Image 1 (cartoon, rainbow, N blue to C red):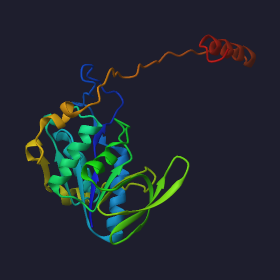
Image 2 (cartoon, rainbow, N blue to C red; image 1 turned 30 degrees about the vertical axis):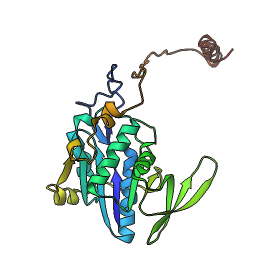
Image 3 (cartoon, one colour; image 1 turned 90 degrees about the horizontal axis):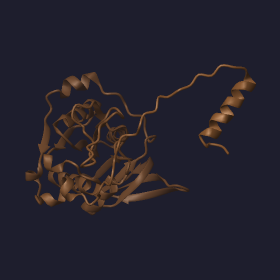
Image 4 (cartoon, rainbow, N blue to C red; image 1 turned 180 degrees about the horizontal axis):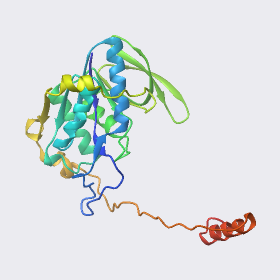
Length: 263
């Protein structure tokens, strides 16, 4: 079985500046890490390989420094990886991102099973996985919390819906997005780090795709228009009160009333 896991490099801190003109995060010089939700997707793939055999590939889209998370995936047990990196991909919304990744998947070869994390911590849309499946024309299931059975031609999964739990038998090739509690991710292995330190990471740009129309990628291919985006304001104001319980209760009541939390 060929398994493909989609991973993304996200900021490792919430103190990230925003380009007010484009609404895009300024990622240069910011400490980054693998998207936490993608760790669960990678662990799911590793468990499947452990039980059923196969090959695990990882694919990411981002600047050259995103190779670090592919190396981390190697340290966890992935077999090979590729990075989609081109300035023409920058500033993509979910639609352009999904299309770019779908073109990357076509370039490296379609997998039997594509696994994504539920969402990313820097976007929180939870839309990229299903949109990729639509571009590829394959079935998909989101919010998977359990792998029940892997058959020769399909996979049976348990889906966590808002008010129900559903069991779905979905045929290969397909895409699933997994919840964060499906498996506990393993730690990277120092032994595998040494074994894979020279392993190749394929890098593809727009010129490597079948569809080279620049209007479908990055800001040009993003129909979502950000009206305004800004980092949250930080309020470190504090007060220290002294007094007995009756006095402190009265002060707290007046404060809450002044702030209009109570009437």
